[in-house]
Amino acid sequence: MSQFALEVKALTKTIGKKTIVDDVSFQVERGEIFGLLGPNGAGKTTIIRMIVSLINRTGGTVLINGHDLDDSFTEAMNELGAIVENPEFYKYLSGYKNLKHYARMALSDISEERINEVTELVGLENAINDKVRTYSLGMRQRLGVAQAILHKPSILILDEPTNGLDPQGIREFRDYLRLLASQGTSVLVSSHLLSEMQLMCDRFAIIEKGKLIHISSMHDNETSEARKVKTIEVELSNPTLASKLLTEHMTDVKVTSSKGTRLTLSVRKEQIPMINKLFVENDIDVFEILNVKATLEDRFLEITNKDKKEQMV
Ligand SMILES: Nc1ncnc2c1ncn2[C@@H]1O[C@H](COP(=O)(O)OP(=O)(O)OP(=O)(O)O)[C@@H](O)[C@H]1O
Image (cartoon, rainbow, N blue to C red; front, side):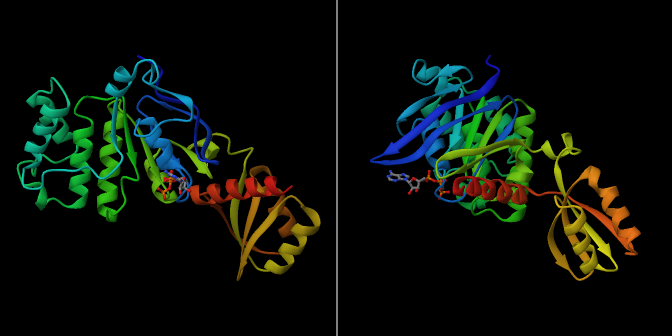
């Protein structure tokens, strides 16, 4: 068993003169939910279609549970479960019959016990004997996941799985993915919705114009908090004077917004007592200092803006 459920190295796709995916590398650990995050047209679907071998790679290597797609295609594909387009079902058959039919046609050695196991895992046990045409979109998605994991793959790959789901459906879907990951199946999931990825993934890669521009851990903020620039919100009696003092005395503290008596500041943790002292010594009353937790959206914008600035220099 390989250390990684999925390794992607220098993945590249060119169509004509256009490079759609440019030298993308990342690894997905066992039991991890890994996100591909990026705006529409960034190249996420193309990356996924190359990994699942729906389209050819122009360059690069893909290893699934250590099996190289180029050398051991069948072994690699046996370790993979995927929903890339909306899964097709026989609407007039029950969920159970659909799974059974798929197992017979596409896979070998799938026991009734396994079908019951995956049904339970995706929470469809009460509806599995109903016809698929009566299922909600969320239930069909979950039946798709059940079908994709019947053969116990090392990694499940889902392209924009929550498209069209309502908030309740998204939350349920997230919970089933988490359960699956806790049992050792890794998940690679793409989305253009930052808030959703923040809730769903352990780590994420940001893809922009075919390039991987950032790869990170969701827990970065907490582990190296002392060194990192953070956002705080301060409520005080004289925000105009406070902004002026900060500009004069603490040049590396940024005032990012000012609303009524509240200022939002970009600071390092060690600067907070100094700022407080500066205000108090100048007769400014400080009513509140709030730690604003950076959302993935803030980080996404920060990273993509930084990238743009670097390109402009
Ligand atoms: N067969 C093709 N021929 C030409 N251009 C293509 C082809 N397939 C994809 N592209 C282009 O490659 C870019 C990346 O497309 P891709 O679908 O991978 O992006 P995406 O990040 O998945 O976006 P979305 O969320 O909109 O699907 C887009 O600009 C798209 O127009």
